[in-house]
Image (cartoon, rainbow, N blue to C red; front, side, top):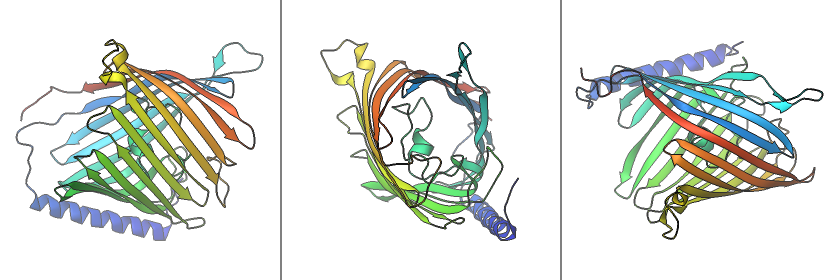
Amino acid sequence: MLSFGKAGFRKLAGAAAAVLFFALNALGQTQSQTGDVKPIPILQGSAGFITNFDGGDAHLAPIATPVVLVPVGERWLFETRANFETDMVQLPGRSGFHGQVEKQVDYAQIDFIANKYATVSVGRFLTPFGIYNERLYPVWIRNLQSDPLTLPIGIGPSNASTGVMVRGGFKARPQFDINYTVYFSTLVTTTPVDSDRFAGGRAGIFVPKARLEVGGSFQHLLQQERSNLFGFHAVWQPTKLPLDIRWEYARSKRGSGYWLEPAYKLSQLPFLQNEMRRTQLVARYQQFFTGQLASDSLPPVNTKQFEFGVNYYFMDGLKFTTNYGRQFSSIGNKNVWTLGLTYRFVVPMGPEGGRR
């Protein structure tokens, strides 16, 4: 059931009214720059078959995440992503692997492109705390298939928020750009589309010449202990090297930690054959520290984990991936091993390059 409360409903209604006023005002001030190009709906997404060996136990995890984008006019966009996955394991006394398909709507939102500086979204959206949940989570994007230990911090019970979000960016100086996101989420108790009640924001500085972004996240929980959460992130892709370095830190009363992930593609090594130049080497080191409050979604004790992985790109969108790591904690050490194949697809649902 939805659990807004009178005060929460009034705040959400007020926020929606403010968003509508802002959107209509911007609509009257900003002229269209799309010309006579007719936007068409797009079906895209990813599929994968991932095998996880967690402490010696095998888990088969096929997954499909279709994304539907439906433009309405030149300024409105409806977008939604569904998630179909299963965790198949061997059961005692039964042969083969068994599991149930879990279905979930990751997000379903309506976007209004107010102007070149702001886009307003209303509905269910991925919580923009840090960068992993919103930018790196899909199996075809992530370099390592295992989740960071700190991922549950700040993203809510189902990785999404229900409410309103405003995001955009602008050029602050010729040397760098600023991007921002502010959002409010209300309480929803219906599983699997539940969300917490909080407000927050994220801001980043991007330096195009250095291909470097640094930023931070803030969130205030408007329920339970009403605590503050903080996060920092950095992404660097040097212009002269096929190198990708990602770093993230998150802190809350339920725990804190960081992860560092460098990835290097062998495309510049002259002594390798063309096939080997499609190989990418990845590593990740991470630490998690328990907080004042317990959490079912975070490790129960201080934990360290190191992983090394190899990705091979058969073609654009089709990737073989594997990684091996070891986790260290006071409740026991264990190996973490993942093997998988991922694929990204894009299907236009209309004539491409259509004209009005």
